[in-house]
Image (cartoon, rainbow, N blue to C red):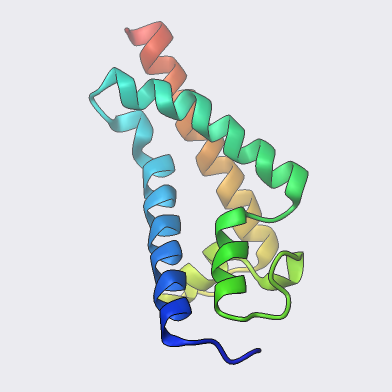
Length: 121
């Protein structure tokens, strides 16, 4: 890993925080009481999933790893955000499990948003 300055590390921490907030938002968007949030999620979640499928990596993880000077930033070898997040609390999961979990949570939240907007009103 290359030596990076303190400013780049702070910006990387901010990107990490944005990633955490994005993950929380996607997980709970369906439960928000505001239609605007549901509509935003209805478009944001599919765009996010499409990005994962096209790029094969998450742009937020890539930015964070690049800012930290990780040599594999931008490749699948950069590591999984969820694997590292679960690792913080002592839970070990594989990349495949993290991927399945990410898709499952995203699709479930998307379905919840659509259900609330179009069925439950």
